[in-house]
Image 1: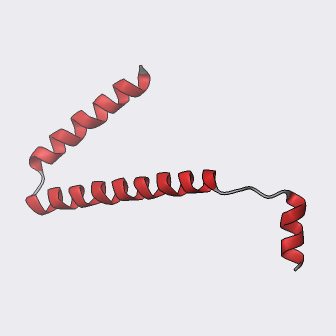
Image 2: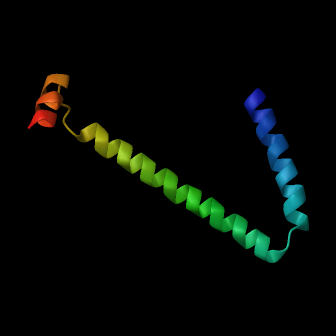
Length: 67
C-alpha cells in the first residue's frame, strides 16, 4: 500500500512538472525512459541466458584458473 501511495505521489509531481516543461525537455525524458527500458530488457535477457548455462563446481573453476 505504501509503495502505491508513493508511486501515485511521484506520478502526480512528475505530471505537474511535465505540464510546465519545454518540448525538448519532454523529448529528453522520453529518451531516458526508452534507454531504461532497453537496459531492463538487456538485463532480463542476460539473466535468462545465464540461467540456461551449465554451472561448474568450485573445484572445476579453480582447475580452470590454474591451467
